[in-house]
Length: 302
Ligand code: 5GP
Image (cartoon, rainbow, N blue to C red; front, side):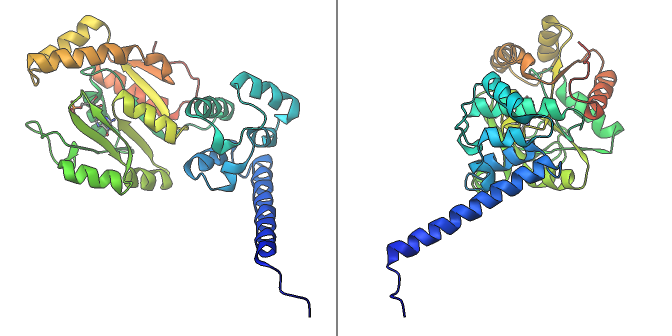
């Protein structure tokens, strides 16, 4: 009878087995991408969501060269263009590199319209009116209902316009991972997008619309790079000021604060996949819904 292996050998054997399993898992991912069973974007996202996954351990070069029609030469060029080194693994990419890679893969995929659309834009541009119009005229589109710590305005209904929650409840939602994104808006209250209803709607093949602020849009892009981001623009800055002051729901100090936010927000419009000018609510709503079905890179209203 041979002597029992010493613990270090056992560890080594277990480690070797784990390494083989990881290699096999990575090979299976590459195979699935090469046979179009799965997209490279999907694999990358899984790697970003789960740092211990086989996807996270895949080298970016392996991921890209598995994409049908990319091949090693074009992969090398793409890696240089994206500024990603050969050794980098999917899970080891920084936020900027993740964005670049996701944008590249989305642009390549191009043809599949995203089912998740984010409508953002400066304060008082009329995002609320556009989404209310979509709620009324396009029941096939599911509008996400955000949670907020601010108090309801007259006419706002809990569960329809927002879930109005306490600070403690908002803390709990963050802790339990119930929010897809959240942000402090206008330096005052917290707003967040509940994730479970969105996952359910997307799984059922529905189109989902999120009407959130710029920070939220950026967060969604980070966690769901396939989401399509639409920026709603005012016809002019003067019109935006008129809309904000005309609304009469905020005091002067609050109006000034929101205008300052709006100025910075307008500067971010080029980060978005598409722009829609809100000249007339019905028209803008129709354009947003149309964009939900258009291929990425389709012309926008600007
Ligand atoms: P209001 O208080 O006027 O309803 O909304 C203020 C801002 O909060 C708007 O710009 C709106 O788009 C944004 N907002 C509403 N819900 C969310 C959300 O779930 N997440 C984020 N990040 N912003 C939101």
